[in-house]
Amino acid sequence: MIKNYDQIFSDLFKSESRGNVICVKVKGNDKPLLTSVKEVKSNRIIVFNPVSVYGALLEENVYHIEDIETLKVYSALYSDPVYVRIRELKHNIDEIKRSMRW
Image (cartoon, rainbow, N blue to C red):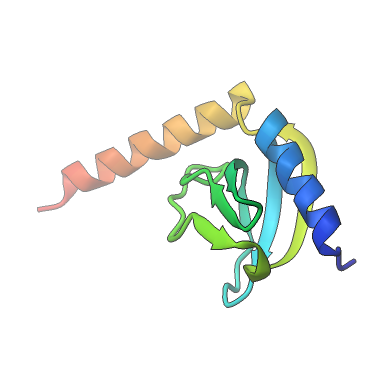
């Protein structure tokens, strides 16, 4: 289902105010982003959390509203303790990998 800009804005502001996890398909990216909105600037620029729900760093976390193809809001919160723990574990694993390089 393709949403119009009003629906997309509504979903973005919902994620920003409540911290809901969103899945965003951005033009030019094959993989959707699974994160939450950190800030909506002047109703045109969207700043996402720089780390996905599962702990992967996003290549880019600032997009223009016109770059968004589709968007889905989930009831789960970005700050949910389960997701926070997953991000911590992912970070720890990445640190261990970096320290093992020779």
